[in-house]
Length: 276
Image 1 (cartoon, helix red, strand yellow):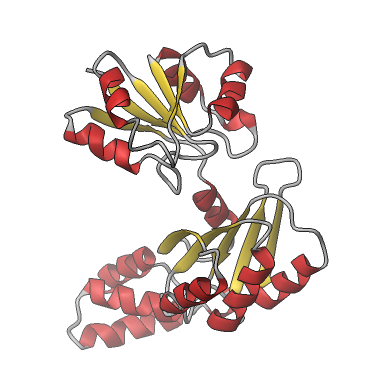
Image 2 (spheres, one colour):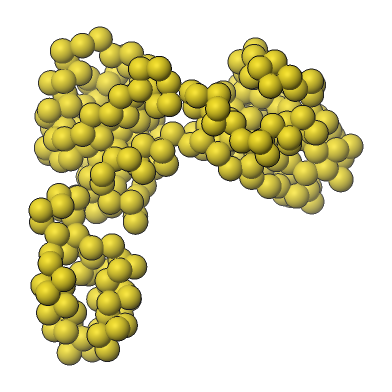
């Protein structure tokens, strides 16, 4: 029985395709690709001769049996057009079907736009929610944003150049003027990052033509993302000592004080245990 490999491919720069990814793509019996033409160009660049079959949003359920049959004869690699398969791209149903049929499923890690943008955003990374593309229709988009407005952790969205201004305006109106990192064309020739308040991002992108794919990283409700608001060591230690007297557990204290202090939960938890 073969293994289903979920192979991450570049989100822009072809140098980000790992040596392991090249080997797995080369050694697999079949590659299931979101767009065979796009993936075909990638395979040609790396001189990979493995046969391709299409696996995209509108045929993903019809192709399950054929791909499972291929797995019975050898390894199959699943790739999306860019980034990590099954993360906002087709793949979830295939993974479920492969597991249910007794096949092994393994990742070949690599590029992922949401994680890449988060890592350079300057916003808290210890807790975040990735929410994919914002709804296209204005009414649905505003309703959706209102539903997640009170989440305290960092929020990550994808957006197209055609809707970026409307989405920024809705985010500003509903979330308020939070901190945002707008990542555009990551790892590509015109790579750009804009960091600051949402109002500033809206004005900035009003002044130029929006091109490429956007990833938005936004601070959570009552965020601890502004570094100047982070408590000093002494302030945090004093708060920990007060909370310990109340009889709360280390976990409870770390969660509460991380939200208030700007410190990461793991750091607070470690300090609580040292202070006991």
